[in-house]
Image (tube, rainbow, N blue to C red; front, side, top):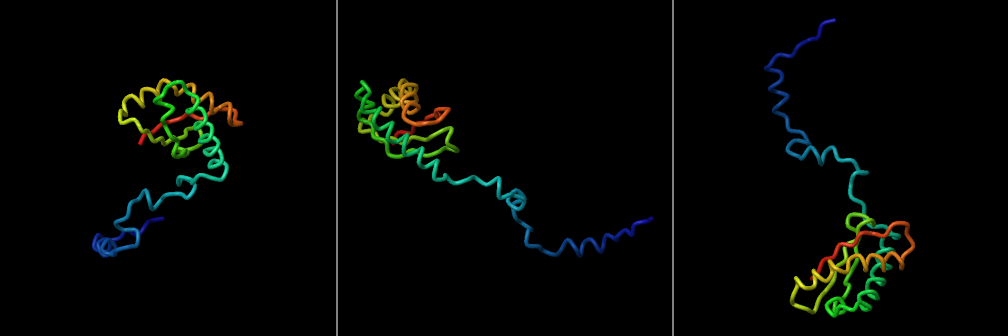
Length: 130
């Protein structure tokens, strides 16, 4: 069975037509809805609230005065509930001292969060100081 080949002249007329997908990003065109990032659900937000309250209490109980001065503004899943972004505000203008204190106390704070929530694995805490 032979195929009918098109002449090059016929192909140029087809290439001149603009379609709706011309000039768009192929990644966006072929994107699947199940690959899109998901918004935090009700349970994720509930976990973030529990972690916020646990951190608020454990920061106040720390012996370090730099950590006692911190205020927990919000806790958000980043990108899921296995890792949580904790946004803190500090009264101390020395940001390096605050971050050094947080780095030293990360294990303690994570253990306090683990005892306050009911999960098999304690989430990883990532701190951001404003």
